[in-house]
Length: 168
Image (tube, rainbow, N blue to C red; front, top):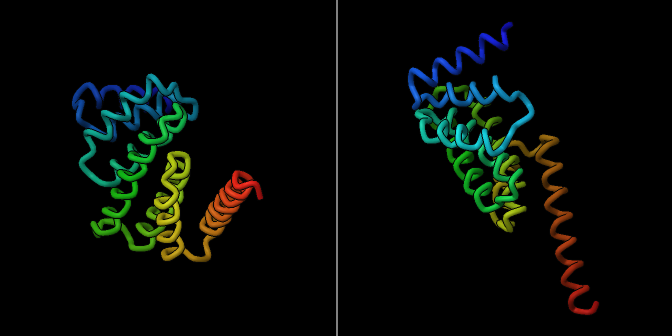
């Protein structure tokens, strides 16, 4: 019953104001839960990103768009959406509307989430830069340490490929 109310409320909000980013994002959540039809959801997520008036909403929409782009193997687009998400997360920290610790945690999570689109899009320098910034903000966080391991393995694999290609 609560789900049906949430879905109806989200639909009504979008019908009243098509430029309501939160209504679009809530509609996606209410309608699809954890199973997304990428082709159907992407236009709604794009609408939410375009309508976002606050960095919190831009962050949410950009992260969703990055995930959808990854699902469609559109790695360049995923990286662009990750860039927008990082920018939004940085804006949240400078807005003063959230506690510093929460804003920092949000930025760290966003930076870590951006690493995958950067790696898959061949933007290895951007992936390393995101990791460095996350390490500065949360050097002992388990997720940051795990991301460092993933990027180190990527680097070793690249070196091995170069050695094999050179006949070594």
